[in-house]
Length: 141
Image 1 (cartoon, rainbow, N blue to C red):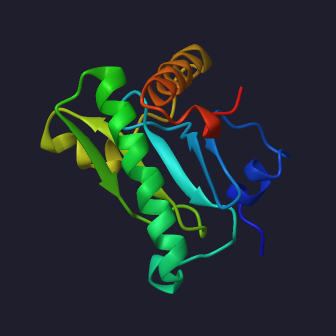
Image 2 (image 1 turned 180 degrees about the vertical axis):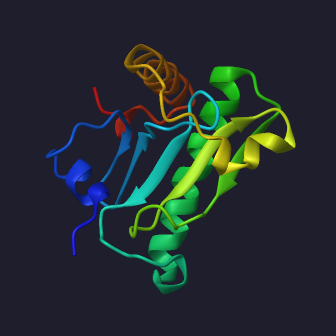
């Protein structure tokens, strides 16, 4: 059964994409823990992270690492958080976000009412950071 992420990937629901390649996309969540909170998602519909093949999981983590570098750069954060929660949408996704303290790893503190302007600004910041880090070919316009 297609997930909401499949609909976002297909363009049926709008998304703020910061990465796009043949296998993986990354877009901002509409309920961020911290500014720049990004979801790294395989295009292929896979529910559980334990069920993904090694090559795809390797690609996901490589993209997550690039996004992690960008969130640290874009927000001057000391750490980039990485979580695999998997309870809210049955489509594998890695949460990557700037982190300053341990509470930033608590997904239950996500803000469901982030403004469109703040999300657009975060997407622009991430795209700039990714381009500066040499990932321009994967950053959509």
